[in-house]
Length: 303
Image (cartoon, rainbow, N blue to C red; front, side, top):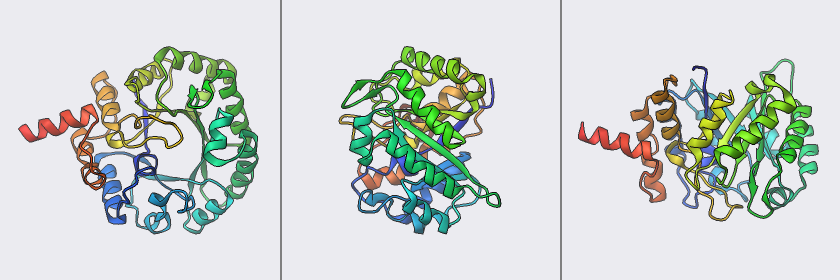
C-alpha cells in the first residue's frame, strides 16, 4: 500500500477557534516544525474577516513569511477574502459549504444553494490560465448535523455534484462533529463510488474529527475502500464552534503512527511531529492529548 496523502490542517482548522490569540512568530515556528517533520501539504490560514475569526486575522502578515517547501493553501469565504488572497499570490484555496441547511445557516448565514452560487463567482475569479491555481471544496456535516441529526448520504452526493460542477480540484468530506462510525463511512464511501466511479478517488479527501474516538477506525474504513487522501491536525488541535461538544480533529500523529505501522510510508518523522505543537499548546494552556504524540514524547524523554 502506498500513495497516501496527508493534508495538515492544524494551522488553520486547528487554531481558528482558540480564544487565546497565538502570536505570529509562534504560528510561523509551528508551520516550520510541521514542514521540517516532513508534511508536504499544509492549510496555513484563512482570509476571513478578523471580526469573525480573530485568531486568523494575521493571514496577510503570515502568508509571505511561510517557509519554503510545502504546498500551502488557504480558506477563502467569499470574493473579498479571495481578493486578499490574490494580492498575496495565493495559488491554492478552499471554499466551505455543508450537507446540512441548518449548519450552513448557522455557520455562514446562507443556504447551501447560496454558498454554491457564491463559490461559482469565487472560483471563476480565481482561475487564470497563466497562474497556478488549485481549489478545494469542503462538505461539512457529511454524517450528522448538531441541529438536524443524521444526514442522508444522498444529500452529500448532491453537494459533491454541485462542487464538481464548479470545477473544484478536490472535495473534502467532513465528519464535523466526530460521530461517524466505520460502517457509516463505508456506506457513504460506496455511495460516492457508485455515483461518480473510481475516477473520483483522487478527488476525495476525508476529514475526520475524533469526538467519540472513532477517527482512526473511520480512516481505516476509507482506506479499505481505496481512498488515499486524509486531512488531519497536529496534536488533534481544532474543534467546531457551531457543533456543541465537538472534539478536535483527528491527530496527525495518530494517523502517521497507524499508517507507518501498517506498512504505508508517509515520509513524516513522528518524533519531530510530536514536538511541533508544544509551543502552541503552551500558548493555549493545554497538555498534549493525542495518544501517539504522548507516547512519542514519552519515548523521547526516556531515551
